[in-house]
Amino acid sequence: QVQLVESGGGLVQAWGSLRLSCAASGRTFRTYVVGWFRQAPGKEREFVAGISRSGGRLYYADSVKGRFILSRDSAKNTMYLQMNSLKPEDTAVYYCAGYRREGIVVSTDGSRYDYWGQGTQVTVSS
Figure 1 (cartoon, helix red, strand yellow):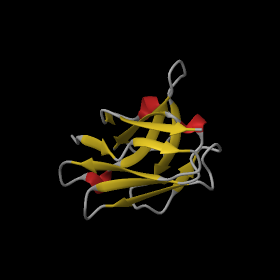
Figure 2 (spheres, helix red, strand yellow; figure 1 turned 30 degrees about the vertical axis):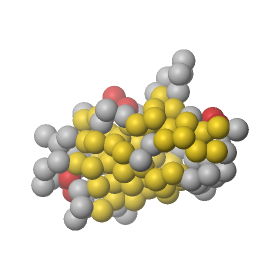
Figure 3 (tube, rainbow, N blue to C red; figure 1 turned 60 degrees about the horizontal axis):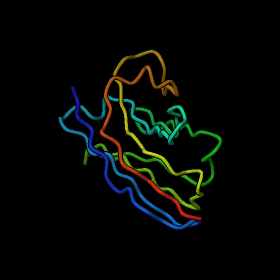
């Protein structure tokens, strides 16, 4: 089992940048597929980005491609989401999540993720 803790959220102006971190407990972080989801008020949770166990496969939602960069450092048990050129529509609570089950290299389906952090608020002002 792994515990995930997000940090790095905050208030930023449009076109600014933030870097979110997701720190994982335990020694098995490298065995988890991990990703970021977000949920804005009144909207459903949506996939943002995901990364494979090795870090070699990356997937991004179309809405963030070219602006967000996902990475993981297994030695530090940490995943990062560098968010650039932020827009007001990026405002949401961001959650990191992970799963160990085999079968899909990186899932964009939140129901496949077994472990979730508590979330960190990102607010982008216009």
